[in-house]
Image 1 (cartoon, rainbow, N blue to C red):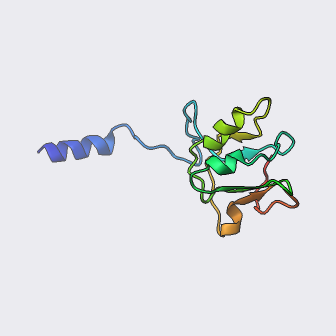
Image 2: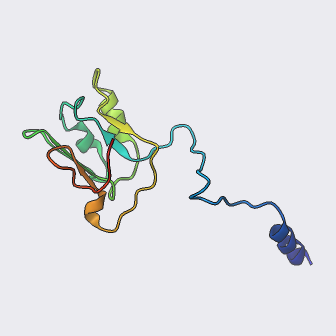
Length: 123
């Protein structure tokens, strides 16, 4: 009888899920989303690539090129943390963007040099 009671209570009770695309979720403070690179602040030291555990960031120091693949990213925030240790830098920010989907692997890449590799707008 408990099973029937629980089923009826959940059937006619308050909903626990949200209608996602229409109702945006409330993100907690400190949420780590997509990495945003600010090329005008970057000195291309390569520390972010060195401390990235998944290898999602590659920095070409000689040609001053920054590449980011969020298909590999763990969103751990180590790149942002190491960039904050450099005085007056902050070239990497973690945004609150979490809808990162694509149909092809090249949709998950960003490059600071030349044309951006991804089909998304990074402003």
